[in-house]
Length: 238
Image (cartoon, rainbow, N blue to C red):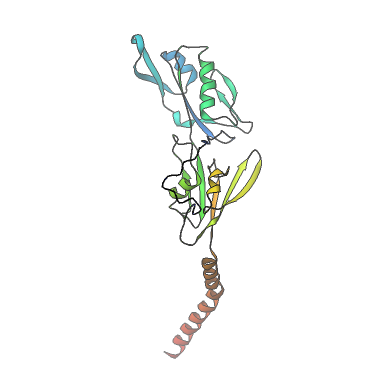
């Protein structure tokens, strides 16, 4: 059972602090600037500019259409090169903070701009006694916890050790490894409960499956030899 040590109450309420993802080197950002002016759009966007629809006062909101999926790759220094604004530091910022920073700068050139920022390549890897897969998270979802991630991969099999789930994370030039006990509600407060970009989650098999697999491997060669010998004898005496 997940979180089996929860108090047996009809309703249990606790305060929750949302953990927003922060941007790291290697992330790919989609950034779109919408303004009422086509020429200004050409300055801040890459691609072909088309009409978005009527804005206030009869003006037309314009938006970029074309190579939007190319995105902005965050380099090893944690920066992106954005049209007009130049080199911008985005490392350790949330997408909302990047949006607010760009919005403030674009307002120096045009009134009433709209800025949209999304993280394109939020993914994590599930291994072991779960559905092995690399899970691609939709760009509009930046908050995925460990339980949601396991559900995306098909959950833990009956052979999985729920009390020893390993999360491997690389951050700020360091690799950390944390073991979480999904039987214990204290896991909900772990800094590793909310998944981050490129996390690896490994669910260890229990002793029964390990022993069974080891037995098969140890005896596979012997069994194959017997089958081979029986086949040779059959060919000789048939």
